[in-house]
Image (cartoon, rainbow, N blue to C red; front, side, top):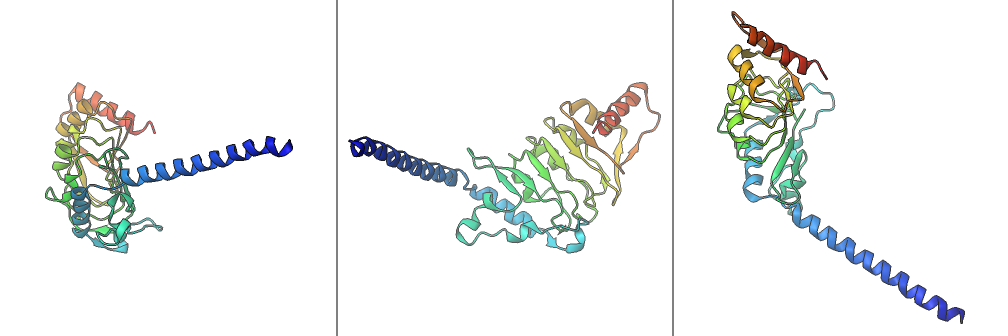
Length: 234
């Protein structure tokens, strides 16, 4: 009698374990399929990598790491850019949506021809603490990467005018252009564009940026106050 009671319970436990194993295998398979990067975006990332050299002195962070050094198009799963260090892909579309290359020892100039701007689905981009050798911030950034909600170009040796095209990134919630190791400038006109168009901004960092403005009008003064209020609110 006791054996008869225990037997169905034993079968039930075995069935539950079997179902769990099947479910685990299924979801692992789905995750693997979703994580395969798009060929054109993986190629764009590799070309981006090749446009720079790796120089330990390019990053000031003591724990800096050359993330792109491990990027490769050979080696099975390692050729999938969604698995690369610093790269984040959307699980459903497989588009590259995040690129975190802060303190990655990147050295070299960057311009509007860079394949970075092929990654039009990017939502988060962090290139802080690298050395872009006095390059100007490419205006194309504001034309092609309009899905960005987070942009950090701080302390990466950019110089020159902050392009007005940055104001086209209307979805931005965080913008960090802190520049203590180079010479970035922001004119009155570009300042006005930033304030008027970046309506979703929650965090704005402009430390070290030269803000030039001659004969500020009342509404320009108020605009500057709004920018500084956001920048100091964090």
